[in-house]
Length: 265
Image (cartoon, rainbow, N blue to C red; front, side, top):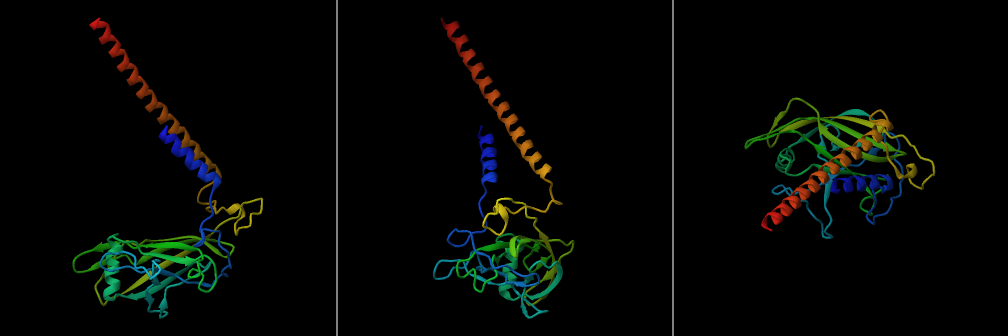
């Protein structure tokens, strides 16, 4: 029954839905859309290099810092809204950045960054919503060096000038040896998947009915509902099997007890 309850609760959540992201007050944020090709600022969690823990400001809020500086542009990395492109960004490994990458590669701490949801100046600082992105670098950490896969796939989804989601992961088959004082050319393959709008009632949100959907080329509606139905059927079958075994065991125990009482009489 517990399994069936979990599935039912999950289905109820899928049907009801809740808007994401929300602002600092937990409300649906306003949206000033990005134009295609417009740069989106990117900043990342500032961490303690010894422990990997977040740094906090005087208001006990997590501190953020720009992505490492790119030698090619002499600016921190930024992405262009709606533009699929390949980007090269050569970064310098200071003592601090080297030790941070030790944490990232060893998975002691995530390389967690964020985009502002809306194209407004100081939007996040003013309490606006943010869209997270984690750069999942691959490699190996030894006592004397760090080996890093410099090739990254970056996939973003967007709609109506807003960012829906973003993820970045290592995609190469080779690593590069890095020590303090070295430079490393990171290669980002940035790709955008625009989300189709499917709604009817005209909810007052950037996407009708407050839903973001994956592109249909990833998964069809039939496959989606078929997977839900399969999960329900399997869960129900498992519940019946476990319930039958439990009841059967209790019946056998009760029968054995009755036989013992009869023998004693």
